[in-house]
Image 1 (cartoon, rainbow, N blue to C red):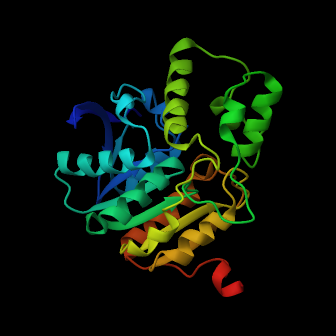
Image 2: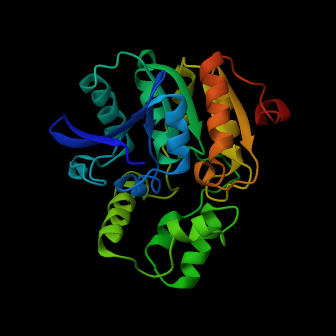
Length: 287
């Protein structure tokens, strides 16, 4: 099922928008990998989300057919780009679901203009660096394309690196040129905002999370090897209204490995407006 596609102008950039579904409106901010299939068919996660909500999914500047990557040099640029996109779409207050880098962008938006975010869902979100833990070096792997390195990258991103979907998303060797270009664009954008070690990290974000006024559901893959679960706890410990739910049998690619579970958690939160009890005690209360 192909989603409806349109293009809007945001700050001089041509931004592709994918949209489908019915029900309450929801803005989805994608990660590094999950935008590729939107050029053809969406992932089951996107389809199932569209069965419950009217889903609007912009493509990051410079990714897919969107333009404007040269304007992005740090994560703040993406945060303000998406705030401008809300204006372009005439959305006064958005319900936002962000995955991985998309969750990081959503959090940066929420600390800058908390009044623009109604409810917030962060899924395996980048952006933080917790002392004593390390975010995986994603860029070391994507610079190499031999089978051994790709297997290690699948192990970083998936609970089951030998699954069919893991090999479809992270194939050994090079694939067709259009898909290679899509991957290159996505990784290039991620590198522009997250290359400097510690990777995929904004040292100012943790101290700003108290500004988020939105009820926030944090979903995290039980076996996330890219971004440690400690980062999920840090988000919950520092956002005033937040709860953590751990998604079993999933690595970092939670929405890909466990789409139905993710959609069920999101739907229960957004439809009731109530945060669930966190699955595990916070690091702050435990320490």
